[in-house]
Structure formats: structure tokens, C-alpha cells
Length: 336
Image (cartoon, rainbow, N blue to C red; front, top):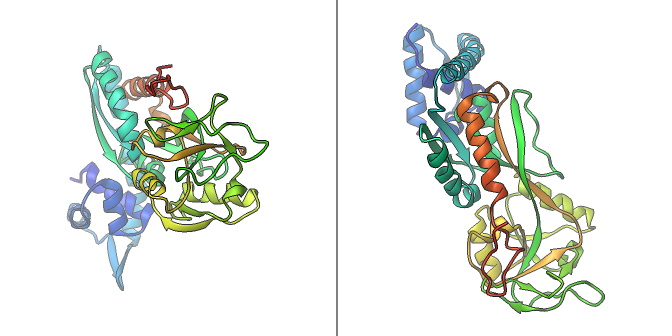
């Protein structure tokens, strides 16, 4: 039958996500574009694959049967691409990469520069997406690999078809409006002076506070249903309190701007702080709260030449990122 990979992938994603709108967001199409793919697939098969149930759609028996085989077809296709890459004398080909906003701003540019230098035959096409969606995007084949985040307190469920490789670990600190909190008696750190970034640190490093010290503060957090939001809520509950979430925000730059404006506190990492120069205080936490930057790809693609090359470049690029924790007296970041 004369069908395309895009049509089959649209059908497979519909079984994963349940709605045309969700499929469109995952694949970077419009809802109308997804519907057109399904209609074209129905014409190619000569069978009805979807039926409307009220405002929703669901797969017919034929649609469910084809979706099951479509996954196998797409997997075989991906394996064929890998085999063809191995026949070439140089590493070349096109990779589709999914990534979240912070990675797009702070990790991808240097990685792409490195790829151009070391593997000029590799073309990278990237897509910005919700960080909680990157795992499904890789599993569904809409991207070849993705940069994502994982939280030890709320680990993302592992799909056995995926390989998740840790690139680096970041420890969270507390971002507060300038001058509103201090380390308090008996805690390490001094008041210090606000540097070019606005953060304060003494000679012995950042001030230390406990999450419990924020119980009377208003918080700026992503939705509680997100992995990030759940990770912060879990850490706060372990510290013995429920954070008062005043502003539900997913954008990191907006979060930093709200902290700077004095409307609440939030947790931040060095990578997050690099997104927007802000006048605020950054206090070290007594509690250990981390997030892991990871690269995700399908297990069978681990030895695909282009995937292996980009993963190696990402590991190098993330390892060389300057840290805000290492500052010269003039405020300029030191390279590691």
C-alpha cells in the first residue's frame, strides 16, 4: 500500500496521546495537518481508521490493527537508516533533535558549532518542546534524540525502548528578592556584595538557608502536574511545609523576572540563572535538591553513527559549560 512514514507516525501518536491536538503538538503540525495525514492514510488503505465519538475521535478496529503494525514499520525504517549510515565512509545524515528552552539557549549553540567542526556531513534539525514531552517524542519517533531533565525525587518513568544517558547534574539554590532573606545566625556564608548578576556570596560561598525558611514566602513554580513542579513540592513537603504558590509559571526567564520584581521566591540552578541577568539574591540550600540533564534516544539507535556522534558532542559541550559558581572578582565566568 502507498502510505508515508508521516501518515503512520500520526496514527501511532494518536494511540499514545488520544487527541488530534496533542498529536499536532508532539509532531509540530497543525491539527488540520494531522487530520489530513489520517485522511490520506485512510485513502491508502481503503478503510476507516477513526470514528467520531462526540467531540473526540477513537480508532476503529482497523485503525488499532494498523497502528500496532505501524510501530514495527517505523522501527524497521529507523533501523534501515542506521544500517545505511554505516555503509558510508564518513559520518553524515540528518538528525531531528527535541529540546527544552533552557537547553536551546545554553547547550545547543555550542554543540552545533562543535558538530560543524567535527562532523560537517551531519545536519541537525531541532524542535523546541515542553520538557515533559521529550521522552514520548523520542519513543514515538518524531525526533531521533532529545535533551531532557530528570529529577531524583520524581523520576520520569523509563520506557524500555529508550536509552537515557546522564550528561550532568545541577544542584538547586534558592532565588529570592534582593535583601529579603539572610542566612541567619549560625549558618555558613556572609552577606557579601551583589555582583553583576545580582547574586550575593561571601568569601566562603553562597549563604545557606533551609527550604523550611520559606514557609511564609510566596512561591513562583511551574504547574504541580509537571515533573519539575512535583519535584519542588516533594522537597518542600519533606522539609515539613506546603509552599504557597502565588504564581504558576513555566518560563524560566519569567520566573527570574518575577523574583527580581519581589513577588516571590523560587529554586534555580546555575544553568537557569544564565538565561536572564537579574538583580536578586541566590542562597545555597541546606537540602540537596538536584536535577539531571539527560540525552534520550531509542535503544536500538545507540550505535547509529550520527546519533553516537551527536551524543559525544553533547557530553563534551555540557561538561565544558562555565558555571556561575566559579566567578572571577570581576564577575566574568571561568571556564572549567
